[in-house]
Image (tube, rainbow, N blue to C red; front, side):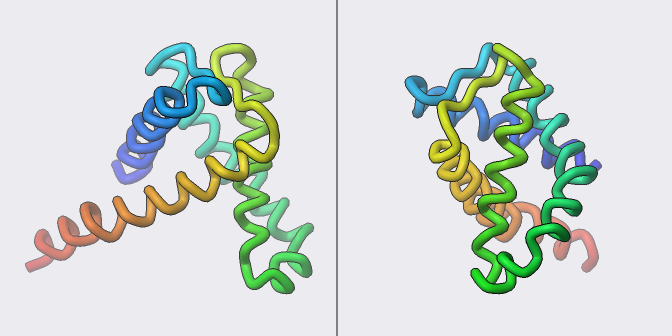
Length: 122
């Protein structure tokens, strides 16, 4: 259930980014956003750990900031695999979206999801 909620949150975030940055980020619709979100989550499970392992020295030297580059690489791979339904203009924009998505997901996690979990435990 948590995975599905994360995919829906990312799909809505993709839609918001596509609406706000319409010149540099194209999305054909909510179905494409949901497909891209599911594909991104699969890539985060399969490919991201390998990228982290291969770039571990750089990640340690940058105190974890290189993880944003890895997130941007998975966004670019999602862009490549989705075809024309999901387009990001360049690696710089993918890096910007990776940082923005990380911040928004962190805020949602801390403000909405964690308080609802702690209230269920009481």
